[in-house]
Every structure is written in C-alpha cells, then in structure tokens.
Length: 165
Image 1 (cartoon, rainbow, N blue to C red):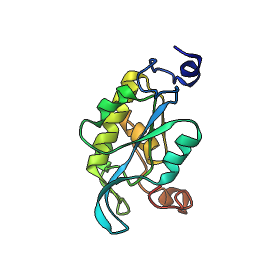
Image 2: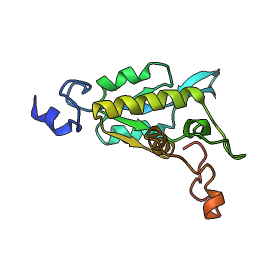
Image 3: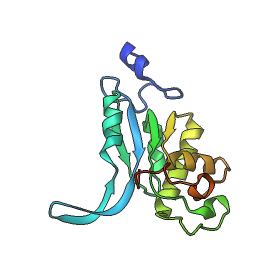
Image 4: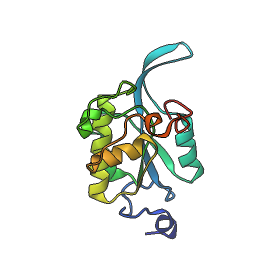
C-alpha cells in the first residue's frame, strides 16, 4: 500500500477496492432517472445536479453516478464512499404510513435502489453521507419514520428553499 493510498483510504475500505490510479477515492452518488431535455435531446436520462459531482471532485475524489437500477448495490464493493443525494419524497409505505396530501416526487425505483445501497454500505462498513433525502433513506432503512410535511410542524417551508435538492 502506498502512502497516497493510505492517506485517502476511507474507514472500512480495503486497499484496491475502489480507489483509482493515484489513490483518489471513488465516490458513488445516487442519482435520478428522469425524462430530460437538453440541446436537441428529449430522452430518459440518468442525472443529478452538477454540484454533487463538482463537490466530490473538489475534495479530491472521483465521482461516479449510480442510477436507480436493480442490482446497483453490487457497486458498493468497488467504492471508497457513498453519497445518497437529495430528491423527492420516499414512499410513506416504506415506513408504514399513508401519504400526506403534500407528498410528491415518489420514485419507487429510486427508493428500492437506495435502500439496497444503504444495506450494502452498512454491511461493508463503507463510509457514506446522506444529503436531505439521503438522510431520510438511512433513517427509514434503519427502522425509523418520517414527518412527511415539515411546514405542518414548524409553520414555514424555509427548510426546503430549492426543490429537488
């Protein structure tokens, strides 16, 4: 193991599992599968706000988008870290609740993929970060529940100034 590899190894990772040449950690980021338009294209796409990948790269990592596909959790063995990105609501059925009238943006394929990623990451001891929706996925995966509409509790919607984070 080189000094470079040791410096970037994440807790729970084994040397060579995911690190790219030069010892830079490979960080998987959960992503969306949505219809998108750009240039002359209007097609199904795997996408994510660019700030996620830019932030990983700025920190010295190599970002890899993880689409919400069946079996995506198999990639965890090749990663040095995992980020569960923000996004729409988790299906309340996942934590035994009925949908609130304001529940929106449910994507069953994304729920399934991210729950599988969490399970694989926890099983491997892989370091990961949940951002907004990602923290909620971790909570539900560990048996927790959610308040579906925070403005009902706090009296404002300032917790979510940008949709789709």
